[in-house]
Image (tube, rainbow, N blue to C red; front, top):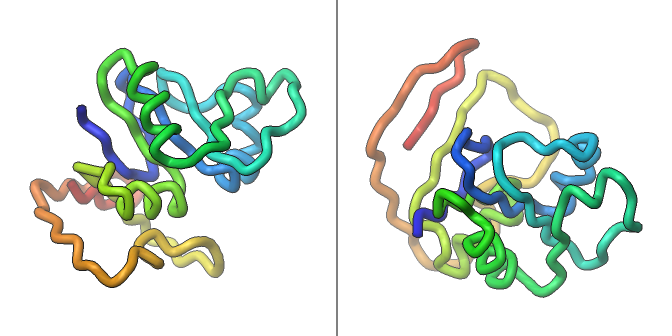
Length: 141
């Protein structure tokens, strides 16, 4: 089962697990999230049922449950993790087998560090590909 942690959603009909903070910052994408598959939002409390939130499944019982539900719903077998905290939880739980990172030439003043709070263990990564994209974006595979 390809399970990837990354910040950008592929155009495959997979599923996406996203954190509540990302969901809130994006305004629920107006009820039309990017990508081509279902979204599972990890949260401690589900939001009130409305037109926007009805496009998402809210998961309150942890990363393992969110990933399990996303795998079951994914048409392609791909599951993307979106948001630093969700990716950190997936890495700590041993659920991520591929990471794709987009580096852009912008320095942000705030946010959650992607590779913060992973614990004392070393996680070894193999770089398989580097691609230059438009507007100075670098894709790391």
